[in-house]
Amino acid sequence: MNTRPEKLVIGISSRALFDLEESHWVFETDGREAYCNYQIEHEENVLEPGVAFGLVRKLLALNEAESERVEVILLSRNSADTGLRVFNSIAHHKLPITRAAFTSGSSPYRYVSAFGADLFLSADPDDVRAALKAGCAAATIVPGHSLAHEDGELKIAFDGDAVLFSDEAERIFKEQGLEAFAASEVSSAGKPLPGGPFKAFLEALTRIQAEFDPARCPIRTALVTSRSAPAHERVIRTLRAWHIRIDEALFLGGMTKAEFLEAFGADIFFDDQATHIGSASQRVAAGHVPHGVANE
Image 1 (cartoon, rainbow, N blue to C red):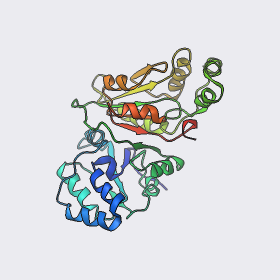
Image 2 (cartoon, helix red, strand yellow):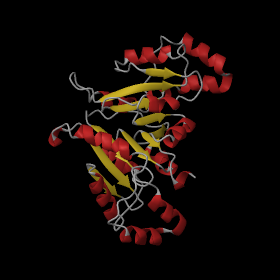
Image 3 (spheres, rainbow, N blue to C red):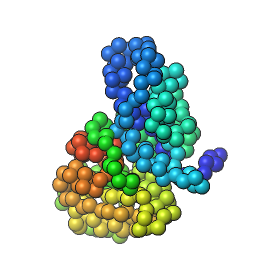
Image 4 (cartoon, rainbow, N blue to C red):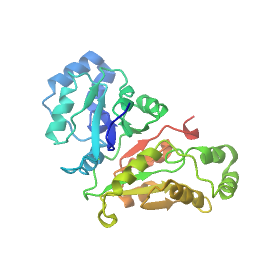
């Protein structure tokens, strides 16, 4: 029986947290033994922040002495031996991360559920797909923008269909076209959309937001969707039915999302479509959610 306290638990891989591209190149070109030797030889060299570092730092800043709201757990394909460099870097950057699983090359996703993780972030697409299949919100952190926004507010942006919501409506769009999609959404405006893989994660964020005065809440969320009117109504009514708070909603009608995400100041953006993630990752940290009809 899972008796973990009601806190937000994030599982993250070492390559999502730190810049390990150089050592990963050693692994890809020279193999495991060369990689292990490289990490041990460089274990006193502090790793630079990776794409998700700024997000993790802001998540951990939500904790207070009397209230642990967030825990971040390292889930790594390193061995305990090669993982020492990662833990040394965690200590150097003063990140309060104390729990970890090192799996020596095998997939760490199987520990996502055991740790009670609400979200899993990794640079390995196969691990992410496995975590999603197991029912955990998960995203592949893609190389790109890694500079955290300096203000203390944590800003997380989500796509709608196949991320917060199921891919039910997006499937109609892909298979039958825009006109059929719009007609379906208008006729179903009063029927809440089924939840997608990130619904529970957003619910957990909403619970934390409720602990703060709305005027001083350190978390801000945004829905950034390609939908436009009249397909907006079903989305709004769905979030209302779920009792979920979204601070900003952008209905872009197919416009490129990257500039809007930069204007919002997103610390991370989650989307199911690789094309959206590719452009967004040049402006903000981005995670690809390989779920739904766009990834079949």
